[in-house]
Image (cartoon, one colour):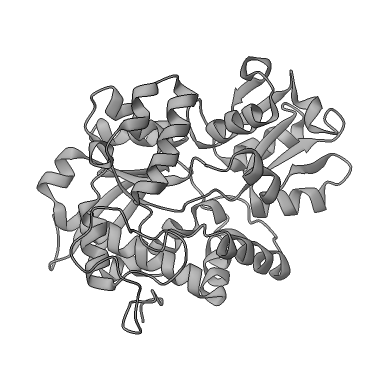
Length: 359
């Protein structure tokens, strides 16, 4: 039960046993004390990809899931009781690393073995969007289910696969440590141009949790929004989060990734300048209209493009949190047309919560 007024939430992580820069806001909400400051203790269960995370929520094994948004929308289309609560980010920090012996250019991708987390999960969906952007038929790629990034890296190094999307920090280190075998074929900018709308992560919960434990939902949203603001506003906070979850993580979770200070600063600058951090919860109508257009095309489900946000999300919690914290002054993730309480969509004044790490 809940002790001394504290709440508890069990979350399935589609990222598996480790977090990287592509999961950094949920990682930082956990270790930076943001959820703890909301009176919420979060317990993570690793699973292989966002599809498995959604299944774990629906099976009642966990209270919520972290993974890409596409399986959540798919569940709603199938009449299953799952809703997006808040976005982890608005884009994705992954690069395409290839075996340089078999792939020298994007033209060589056709017919190759491409490692993914799971079919329909995050790296598979981004892979499909990249392939589509390059004009390569999806069916000409051999998608190999390998699991989260550390498992995909093992297959790259062993030669079992020809390419894989891995976390941006992992890509930098792999290309540096194995220059004879691996190279980074598509970096941040190339990926963004091929797939401008990306299958970023969200926290999703069951309809029952929304109904029966709204205080847990609110704490999850508020803690994650404050963590996202902290990462956007502070390079030092970003560095600390990367140190705790990437460069100095416990060996029991997975191998550390020796990304340099300069590389971390460059990653932060790119994430910051491209508006990747979901400083206002990432639930704007405009953002989701773009997401649904991509979903409709990818899944051949034209009607999905017109889904109202309330059909697959519970945007009221983010709206309430923004009414309390103020809207962040960043130029992206602006909730203009979103459902929000009166006064919540004005620019943040000096009193708006910048999201500094809890003391």
